[in-house]
Image (cartoon, rainbow, N blue to C red):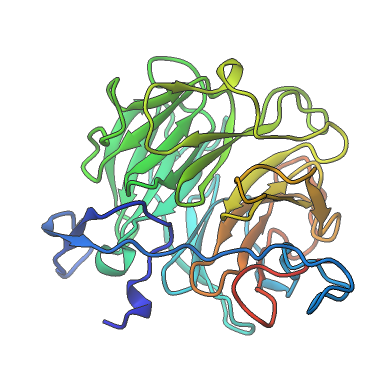
Length: 377
């Protein structure tokens, strides 16, 4: 296997163990195998912005991704999106459960892979989040948060889309997930109940990760999680707040140390980035690096980029791009191979005004020099 094929989709802090699944025929779930320690890869970096007139800096802002067009069309509410280690991505439709593979190269047709069975999206749930295993190249597993008619579940999906429940009895509500700095699956849950409004750390078998001290719980105080991402050290959680679309109350990003436990969000912490109603409200999916945090906006119909200083703190207010060009934007993922961005539109949700080819997935490549996402207009 080439070194390129072994790259993972999420930055990891420290060595960790990974499932290596044995191959077998048919569509039976593959979920056992040997374990071995793997090295920690580096995350692709979004470069710092250059000022007009500075060397190499003309009219563009390298902290912003460059719009380079559509890679998939005809989707219905692509709510879940995860990048793969080969530079492709998987996108999941919320209500249908259809998972489609998309490619960064122009002209490569999208491929419908499978439909996740048993989901119920009638009350706003369905297939709401996905995160590829950090060792997808070896085990072809994708984690997903799905809701049935009675509950929310964290499941793993093999290459045929066969689900294996890892955690059940969760709220049938909003949720987001990412692979944490320690290699464990982090899940932010909405709703109520013992595991509602929490951040959970889950190992590959459905047990608690090492950062959890109260069952699976790492942190509390999550109200309406709609996005989650990591820069390899910190974990960012996008809380949608509450209120009518376009006037969201509390729409903000919170930052936690992905290795800590027992921390709180909401009233226990100040927002890392807040979004103003009527301008950039509706932040949902996110992507992060050491120098920038990008969120996709439904109501703003924009990407919002917050440049970070050397202390990983916001260097200014979010700047908007792609505004109104593709309508409502929701799902977002960072390509670990080229450093580009995957962006999913969300115009068939009953609020947006869909175009004939909606919903779409966009690929926004890095600038010509590489190293991270480039300029958007």
